[in-house]
Image (cartoon, rainbow, N blue to C red; front, side, top):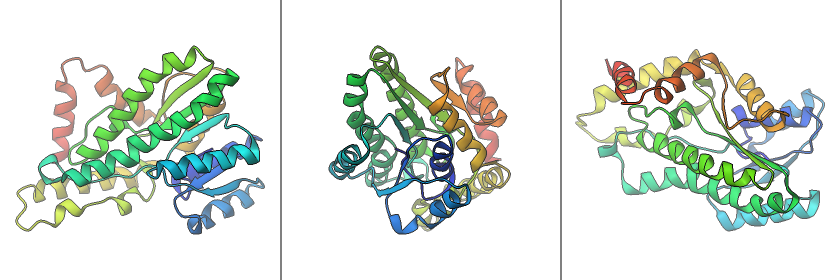
Length: 271
């Protein structure tokens, strides 16, 4: 089962797993947006099942999982890919905006993962792969809520991983850097709508820099190939980066014991 498959990494992950001979259930909030997925699957000569699933509707997500299990059998591999991004520094963000971001990127992932764990634990096998972000390791200006939610997912999965491993279940995270997707188009920039906002100039500078990173980023197909590898490899590991840029960016934080290197690098994005 792969979430968030209407476009980008999720779409290519679902098709890529099907290409490996796996029976794939591709989920998305609105199945009327499945045309691109179906077209790519047809182009590559693979079949997959498409189901509606909104990760924020926990009861409905559980019902979807039950329906999938009844039709196809227990889920052997779960790829948590669905997510969204909210723009704004903390002073600009309402409590509602923070909760919405956490609901999609953290609580939805946690709920769906919890749903699949019992059957995986009983069978003594399973893979849970969660697409996080380099923003789950490095806090980025004006992506406060997004990075907080991705940091939370990384912490959750790293905590679950050694426990799940005792029952034969492998937990991994995949950390893309800039990927050419429609994320910037879908970025929730409501926080920029305040007149005379003292953060506006800094925010626009960051958006310009981030937009350039996205345009020159990794292809979604390449990032998805790493997700597929993480889900199917005979030599799994916890943390995967999808590109050299992701390795370098994530490495800023993982090797930065006092935090100074990350703050200096991120400050440069505001100049």
